[in-house]
Image (cartoon, rainbow, N blue to C red; front, side, top):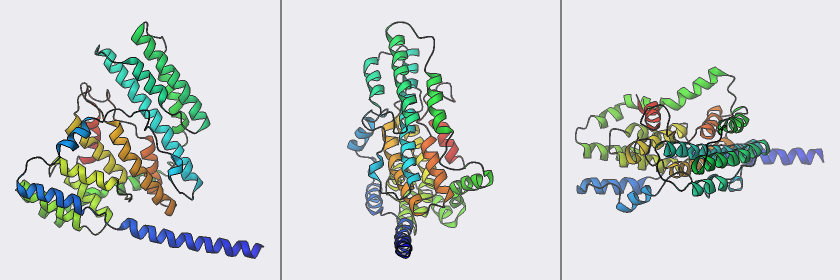
Length: 360
C-alpha cells in the first residue's frame, strides 16, 4: 500500500508539473490585442475625433460606488490546489466588503457636510446588503460594523448624531485582516526587491524602441507606432510595460483601453498590481474627475480588480514559491477604494495614486 501511495504521489506531482509548465508557457505569451489595435488604428488613420463610442462613454457614466450585489468574488469560481489560496480568496472578499463600507461612510460624511440631499434609507439598505464575508471573526466584526454604520447614518440624517462614530468598528474589523497578511513582510530585503521588480516597468522608458516611438512629433503617428509595438510585443510582460509607458504620451482613451484589456486577459505579470492602480487612477483622473464630489466608479475598478486578482491566484497556484506573486495578492487585498476626502483639500486621492505610478 505504501508503494502504491508513493507511486500515485509521484504521478500526481509529475502531472501537476506538466500542467504548470503548460500554464507558464501560455501565461508568458502576449495577449491577443489585434482587434483593439486594429480598431484604434482605423479610427486614427481615418481622422475621426472620437476614440470611444457614445455607448462606451454612456456605460462608463453609469458606474459608481460598488453595489451590494457585486461586492466580492466567490471562492467556488476557482479550481485551486493550494488551500492557502482559497483562504486568500476569503481574505480578498472580506477586504472588499470593508473597503466598500468605508466608501459609503466617506460619501455620507461628505454629503452631510455639504448639506446635499440624498436617499439615506437607500444608503443604509445598500450597507446592510453587503456580505459580511466568510471568515468567522471578520464576519462578526463586519456585521457589527454594518449595524453601527447604519445606526450612525440614521441618527445623523433623521435626528441627532450619536456620540460614538463607527471609527472603532472599522479599526477592529480591519485589524483582524491587517494582522494576518498573506505575504511575509519580515524579510524587508526580499520585500523591497520585489517592489523594485514591480516598478522596473519604467526601464522601458530608456529603451531604443521606446525612445524612437516617443520622439515622433505627430500625435496620430506616435499613437499608431505605440499600438503596433504593443501588438508586436513578444511577451505579456512587454505588453504591460508598453501600456504603462504609453500613459501621458498617447491619447488617454487608448492607454486605458489597452491596460484594461491586459488586466482582464486572464494572464499575470509582475506589473499586475501597479498596472491596475495606474489604470484606476488614470480613469478617475481624466474621465470622472479629481473633485471630492466627483463620481468614484468603485464598481468599475473592482470588477477589473477581481479579474486581475483571479489571474494572480492562478499564477500563484502554479508558482507557489514566487514571493512577488504572493506580495501582489496581498497588495490587491489590502488596497482600498479611492479615498474621497484624503490628502488634498478639494480633491480625491486619484492624483496621489497616479503620481505614485507615473511620476518617472
